[in-house]
Image 1 (tube, rainbow, N blue to C red):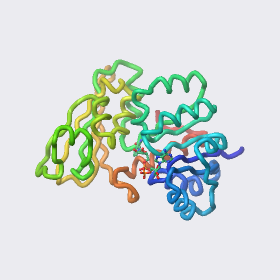
Image 2: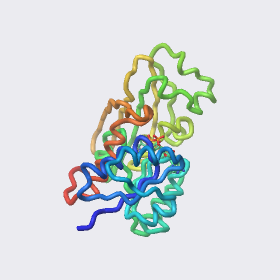
Image 3: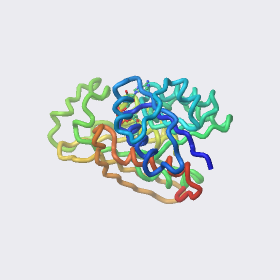
Image 4: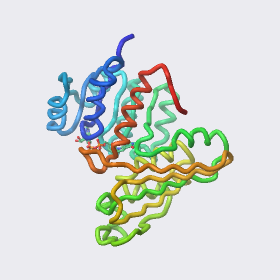
Length: 270
Ligand SMILES: NC(=O)c1ccc[n+]([C@@H]2O[C@H](COP(=O)([O-])OP(=O)(O)OC[C@H]3O[C@@H](n4cnc5c(N)ncnc54)[C@H](O)[C@@H]3O)[C@@H](O)[C@H]2O)c1
């Protein structure tokens, strides 16, 4: 069987580890068609870190030359990458999921054209249960994110509300609202709430609470789902990746596990 040719857009924390996995644990089933980044130093550093050099391609060529595109760049461009993949008839794995909220019609377009769009669970657990629960009636989906103040600093919502997050001394809830509002106020946390929204009841109905405390040492995501099936509660205590403290190690692993699933004939879990 010929190998799946993967092209990676974005050679940061996630793209780098995916590329290494393609030449490591996934090497029998996946080959790298190319890598792409707006920052030349990133593609250079990645090629240095890889066992075998990979072609550095621009956006158009990487889509043309790959069987599956991995987007691990930015929410500002993820919708346009998906659009280009659909037009070119390419499957894709999307990491900057926040950029797809408000552009859900693209997922419908992909369905109509039989393009496979893979959205890994990322830094949260419970997407499997949420998908199963969605077959019946769901009453509520709530995400509670707990992050140390440093992990939230600079968010537009904090600026707008004049909240100096770094001066907070004890545990404090700083935001409660819909995933749609969370996406705008905390773009760094959108991916988790965006994945949850797309898998469940949408960005308007998914509730998000953000809590901070200087005592926190991990990024903690708790999910509560209630519905016809009963109730699910999950909690992930995520350590940050070494390369990018904003990205959880589990999010990187989930992208690699998704790729492994795509290339495998055995599928475990919903
Ligand atoms: N789905 C999830 O659970 C999840 C979790 C963490 C991060 N993310 C998202 O995944 C993306 C990558 O995360 P990361 O930690 O690797 O980030 P990173 O900052 O380490 O790397 C991003 C890379 O993309 C490049 N880039 C930015 N804009 C680009 C463009 N227009 N064209 C080509 N390259 C471009 C940057 O130069 C950088 O090298 C981010 O959007 C992040 O928010 C998703």
